[in-house]
Length: 304
Image (cartoon, rainbow, N blue to C red; front, top):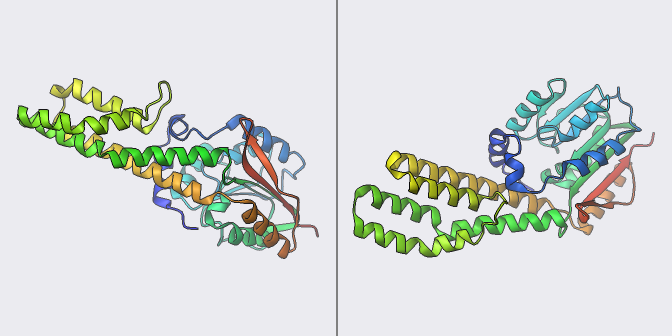
């Protein structure tokens, strides 16, 4: 399962405070933190701990707060590891795929993953987990669930992005501003009329009080229009091109998330892979976020 690393790099580079959450709408930090706080309680806090596809270190932050001292995070995105180093300098970061890591066999006593290792291909990643897990070690993962709450929300985000793209709003807005700055009134009026359908489509995506690509686009375009005397055409076009790049990158991430979601059969296959490598695997559980089934919980142990 291929992942667009460039799109995820852009995500981690651009992430600011709650900005990413405002666009994705899928993070439920309190519920996830509570899960990991409970899941990690019985683990050896001095033993080597690895979080696969760690991002900026959500799970590792919880582990650090609990007193774990030998922490490692791995992610395919260089920007994610840079973000990890900034927020958790005590953690050793590694840029690598989850299916072909640079670590030694049986190196880690605890291995975790939160919405991560499945992106690399869950069965291949499971084989690497089995290779890395030390005797008496524990593996715990929360993975995307097909047709779960997150998966459905992600599909909505994809439709949101595709509607903006198919409407032609951004290209039509650029054409309108070019006509405005040229001083051609007839052309400007034609562009306004030509853009009407696209405006209706994109405005239809806007939900008051809920940040989104569509709300950012329409609000920003309106501001540029109202203050057009203060902007050069190149500034307007650059901003609109930037929003288009943001939309495309966001859609790519959402499509990767949708593709990574695992069905019951997929999870059963991961279980069989782990068992085939000698691990003892608990019956997969459904994990709820916001009261809705949203993910799978996979737990395995390497009994010596």
